[in-house]
Length: 405
Image (cartoon, rainbow, N blue to C red; front, side):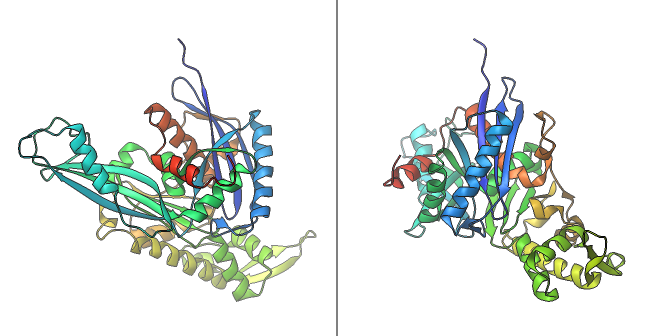
């Protein structure tokens, strides 16, 4: 019987934009982007809901656009979430085999996994991801299942993402009221990494930094496994606000000046003269010294990158062999790659979807859509591995549904 294509939909509700991407997974596993629906966000602050009604209106607008461009009636989505309340931690569970048993049985491994997953976190928090990093058999790391190996001890090492349950619940509620079903919930940088990083890069060591309007998400991979992930509540909107405060310009003009004239590098030759915005008649209506504009931009972005660096494990930067991968709308800032190199001392890249991701929409290669496209890849991986979504999604939807199905 011929394999049928499968439609998956990724939804990112960000500070600056609400984005829906519709993707078709072909029988040969190639992904074709069928359509994108994007609208400017309202009611979202630092990646989290601040005005439910406004955010719902934006989501419905993006949904209508996505259905129109893709010619697909959307019923469910893979939803990315972010926010500084979400935390990624590593934990290892150790199980000692009974004296009369010498080989690792499935129940031994499951016990080690259960111990690793049993992480204490605040009562109001819920687990979003439990991602296996590797196994350890008598002190020796194993990337594959160790069932059947001779051993005295077996360990399971997990990366666990947890966050405040009510905030995740509200995001689910927002989607359900559109009305859409939620196929799974994914921490944004983990979704983005599915698009931005291939297996070889993860093995060599890679850091993904996704800097949007209100947040900077990051995920570090070492030796093929995720080493850390997190969210810093700082993004491109903070740069705009800094320009507004220093120059006195209205926020809208500060944003336009940042995008059209700003540069984040420390090259003094790029800070000569005056940055201008012209009106409809070609006359300069805004003039700001480039030294001031670029210094404001550089200082904020440098601070943000250093906050990411400080959250990485000790010695991690030296272990990054594949480089730093930048996504998100703010990554398009002129001079940002040069600044990132100054901070990390590693090669800097702006990843794009692979060539087998066909699309009639040129915007699908825009780094602003990396997370939503990554959600399609995430869905594809779950389907390919014939794996049910992590148990946490079922618990989340079950726990959070006193207000309807």
